[in-house]
Length: 176
Image (cartoon, rainbow, N blue to C red; front, side, top):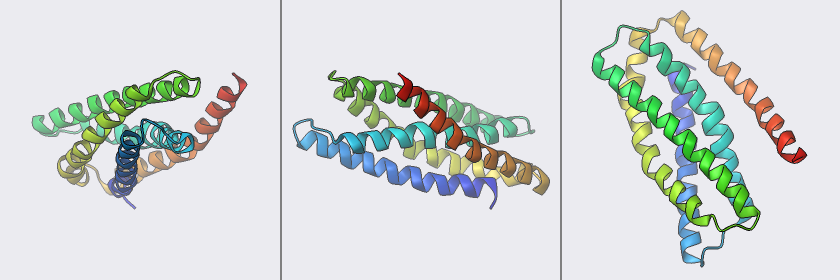
């Protein structure tokens, strides 16, 4: 599979999670602000490790390599927007992680969680569309088969390392 195909497959999974988050927000708003702790924890885990550590890292590899190519200024502008959106999403996800920890300690951070979830729900579909319609189609134009294979190897490395990052983080959190 080519790198963009891998990212598109991941976008489908991200889209499914966005739909789950949308449903959970609706449940929370209709139930008097009660949230299922295991569902919240699973969503946060997905956002933190799958999207932040795995998916965005691969996209940043692709975007940074693409910036090195002689591409059109309007494409560079879109790439810069996407990189900034990744930074924003990373911060938003970090905010959710922190709010979740505080929530489980008894603090009322549900408003922060819902607001940040809503921001991600609003941003992700547009972000994905921008990548798939504007950036991914030009990748094969600027990268030859060898370069695509090397990029795919980097993506595979990111996937392999993610599991170790996830469980090192788990051990550190349990030690606290």
